[in-house]
Length: 264
Image (cartoon, rainbow, N blue to C red; front, side, top):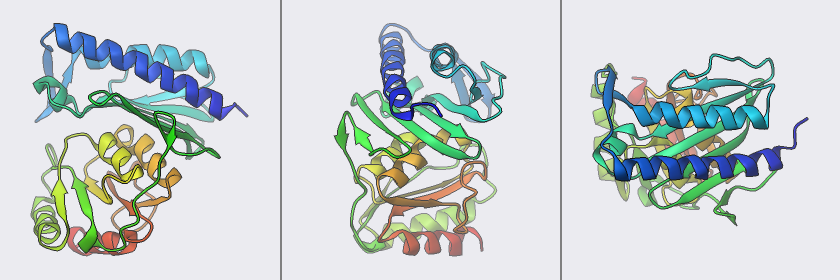
C-alpha cells in the first residue's frame, strides 16, 4: 500500500509547480486556442501542463495509469489510476479570468483515495488523502453548517456543449434564485467543489461533466464532511456526467430538488 499522505504532499508540490508554469505562460503569451467541439476549447498550455503532471505523477507512482483530459498518456493501471484535468476552467483561462484550477485525483480500483485542487488565481491548494484531513494551504477545512436550501449559497455550471436538459436546468435556476441566498457560476467545477469543501458554497450541482472535472473535488467535499451523489441520489457521479453535493445538513433537500426537476 503506498504512503498516501506522502504521495499527496508530493502531488501538492507538483500541482503548485505546474500552476506557476501555467500562470507565467499566461502572463507572457496569448493562448493559441483550438476547438475540440462546440464551446469546448483546448490551448497549447493545457497539453504542456498535462505532460508535466503525467511525468511527475508517473515518477511518484510508477504502477499507476492515467485518465487525463488531453490524452497525453494512454497508460492504464491495474489498481491505481490518476484522474487529471490540467486546467479546469479553460474558457476562463483563455479570457484571463479566474478561477481556473489544476485537478488531480488518485483512484484505487473504483475508489478515489487522494484529491488535490490547486486554484491558481488565489494561490489556494485544497487537498486530502484517505484517512487524512481536508486541508487548504495546510489548514483544516470543513463544509458549512447551513441546514436548509433557503439559507444556502449554491454554485452551478451552465451547459456549454450538451443542451439536452436545458429546459429542466433553467427550471432549477428559477427555483434556486427564488428559494436560496443566490446562485453563482464561476466557470470551474473543480473550484466550485473545493469551495463547497471549505464552506464558501453550501452546495453545487451540474450535468454533462467528465470524471477529471469532479474526481478530486468530490473527494474533498466528502473528506470535509459533505455528501456527494448523482442527481438520483446514487453513486454514479464520477462517470455518470451529473453531480450534486452539499453539506450533510442540507444535502437531502438539495438532492431531492435537483432530482425532481432534472429527472422529470
